[in-house]
Image 1 (cartoon, one colour):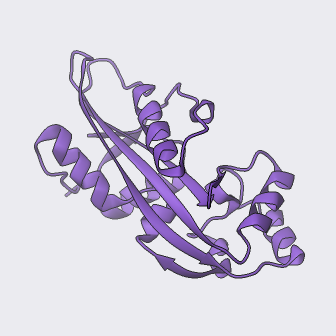
Image 2: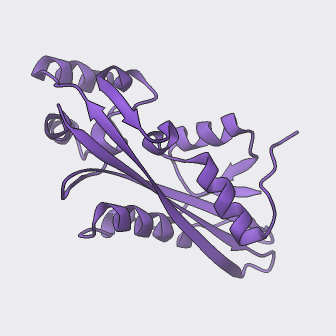
Length: 198
């Protein structure tokens, strides 16, 4: 069983589409407390932090899966917008750029006695080219509400894809989870292949 330590509906959809059984669990970790690192290290440490803060039902065993996505242009990092004005700032900064999207993944084995075993973590990176956005484009997008809770203030899997000219890398990385990496990390911590639901 996978215990997904994420409130992201996009990650749940990706796992469902892949056919992997999972249960969403809470994490007491506040990933926003981790900052000041390069994008790759930031995504990785935030994912690890979420996994460490996850709680699963007593007596359960399985693998905790946590992930975090960071969008970066050069040294500037863009996470989830704090409000609509911040979303405008982020989209204005990303307009006309080829930016990097990094998703950190972390799997932790949990035994039935509550003890935790090996943790395995990895990152996936994609390059996203966005067309130049006008203030009207940005305002119209903000009015949809899609930007809320999304790293980089846009959702590739929804109407935000109309802003994207090209993606180099896995689309799942941009959406928030790379299934191939999840399967590899699961195998690393359990010694078994991740099986799809029958």
